[in-house]
Length: 323
Image (cartoon, rainbow, N blue to C red; front, top):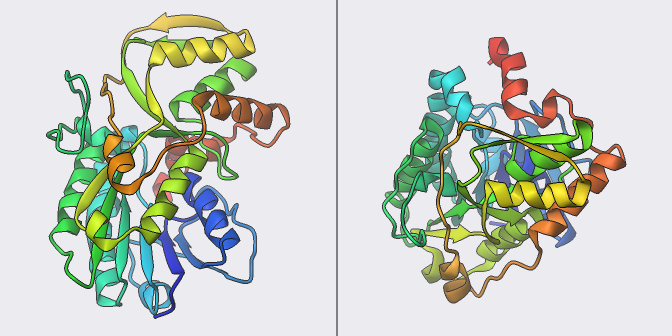
């Protein structure tokens, strides 16, 4: 076993690309397994090994997982509407394949597995704060499978295999593999390219977190004491905002107009991340304003082009015949 060697399953994605670069900067050896459906934005590095593979297949497992210390599972079809587009594919990737990944990681001797769950597992909650012990109420197939994989991972942890789940708030901010189908990022794009944001409802509460802060949290979990993370789930968030508050912030910064329509996505939950601070000493260091500014600057600079690769569902629709 080589200490510091990390395998990122889905490491070519929005969070994975940024996390891979951080780990390389810290001197770790990184293996990335990804389909690269949205392009390869990782670049090259002497300690970076890229494997283009579909996790529904078996051919990548030995090459990727042999002699790996930690596995970070980021891969999934990460868009709620994807379940409506192809429920069978969603199950094949987000449930069946990820169960095999967990078993394969353990069988190949990985000592720790960090699973990217989601705060969407809480669904709609009419409570003052949502903590890790709050009953899960997933309202989509995507979030239901997230919760089921958490349970599956916890059923397979033992003294030699540590498992922990990350229930992250909606990530925002710039990444070389950019997503524009996430709340704040989308509002920035609409404001600067269309001059107006259409708000669906507005009162829904959404937790948000800056990209660099969620990457910080994954790095913290890599080195956290096993007793603090074994079989645990952690909320991680910079704060809770209504959809209206996010729109108002972007409008004030860009001068765009605001229009309104009915609620399409009813998810609403005030996420509480106190456990991460109390147990792991983790605090976020960036603001949502920071994320807004960097996304807007990246759009102005032409580093975000708004092609289908920036919108998961649009890209999946292009690929659906090949999947």
